[in-house]
Image (tube, rainbow, N blue to C red):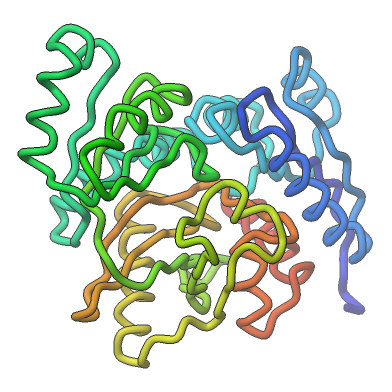
Length: 318
């Protein structure tokens, strides 16, 4: 650390999405890790005047951890690019692609990777074609069990797992609470994994996969952010050959979607060892119960060292 040079870093956290509280928790964790190394870190909440403040301040680098549409739909990231200040994470265009689960799944499917069969339905289609008729045809095309989720969003908000047709109407309503498009997806049975991909300048690499075992069987919002409701195994309890395939798949999807610096690729590995793509997260959670910090620590690295390296990678990329 004799050659250490302190940076002026702005961490963006908060926003107005359903995930505001989680974003604030992530931001504080990132700020604490970077401050502990000697960096000057300022936490800012995206609001009116932010862009002018950033332009006037001209920090060395911006680290956005604004979860939900406020930060992950690509708009904020695209605007940050216009400031000329380096920022950690993906650019606006790729973030927009990853934010839409149906679009990301289609790109991954076209590239030859497995992803569960699904149908995306807007509220308008659901209404105009008649809810009863749409539900009947859905269940013919995609028999239960199913996963119903908002086509955009994170933290498992509005996500339902239904084992019988009777649960589908309520699941659609829950998904539409969080987005105007619902994704109805085949449920693939297997081992649920989250793979962190980081690139600190030498190309993207996959860190040890986190295996997720929610105690009540569903990795819900509560199971994600309340300690003790989910068991995590890092590295995942899969054999070396499958682990290598999972890592290779995660990095390939990170590259395919054009992501940068850090992402989390969520997969299910079935009984035959095949990884199925679920979704990509361009600004993954970094709270005390989040998966990325677990993966970093399992790799033998400290959070501070990795966050420092990512900040410096962002500057080098500018």
